[in-house]
Image (cartoon, rainbow, N blue to C red; front, side):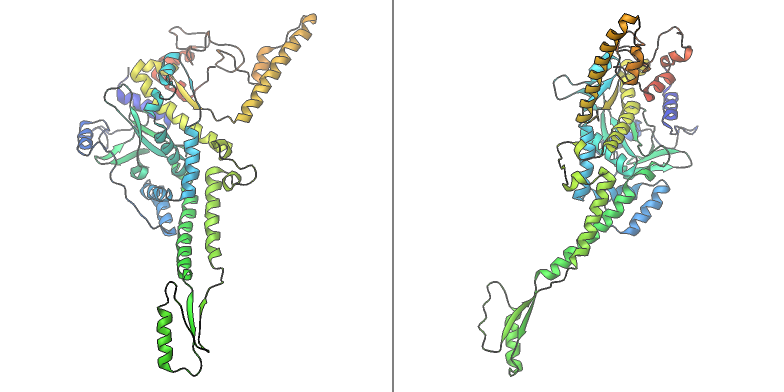
Length: 477
């Protein structure tokens, strides 16, 4: 087994991040060092400092956050995202997306032993869900969608041989351009982040280079600020017009004393007030018939529309148009967005969480054939169409085989199964022909002897090959 520093450098190279440390030991303490552990213990185990809260936001703050983010400081953006979650429309849309994706059916691939260890055995709980709680995964996916990057820690738990995923506040994320490296400003100082080292998880669906530039926060942030101001102005407008003006009309012959006394009674007008007026005297309410509130409501509706298009990719099912139904995530969020979020989250889990767990329990060599996960994002109607297609292909193969038999001809079954995507047990390369004896065998060939594909096919026996096989996952049916 290579030293930990070598292992981290290899993994960081595959993930496109830096694992450089100075000859003196690096620019910050390791997250698992005794100094960090002792400081955390004194503060109840917390790693993140107290959050900084800002309640009033302006467009100038958004511009400031954009400048700071491009310099590698994500504090202002993260504060804005936390404030944006106060908005019911945005919070609901984002929760539907992230919670819906995490709640989809999970599929595991790989060797039977680690896959069996991850799956649920009592119908509810499983090692995977205990290691990666759905709530933490949903928050991490939300950070990735809105900010473009999210960070989490795999925290060791006493009494069990697997950690628990804890999403961390992205307010303390820093990116140093000079090092091409991420840091986390913890209570123990800046900690260098090495994704996939068994403690750090860096979720970057926004891309490896400046992922914050691909997040939804600039568009949604502008909509949020405009909506907040419109809500305040609408409330102010409504408050001013909630109590209409009271007017008193005195006859031309009334004295100043009579008018002042009458005015005092009008000013004291309260609940169930009754006036007995002689001829020539009058009281009335002056109510506004203006429509100034409409401009504020239009601004609010425009902001909500921007939320819907940015997060859900559509507006029909959100606003309750034709075909409205919110029974599941497929009917609320556009299909390609669901696939993107699910694929990005699965990539992070498969490259930074499951390999570390597999190596800790079965050794580094087991990573090559270790478990991989994906969320089943297929819509029910698509699954029905796929099943019908398979039945049609099966009928066609049977009919063609019977029709060609008198002519001593046979159809190319491999070509048909490949063309129509029929899963074949043991078919690793997808050519329609079984490549391994059983589906439980390795995703890549890791036998001790070179095979007819050359020595490269046995690269899974080394840590480099193992990591490469995890990053380039192939499905074994």
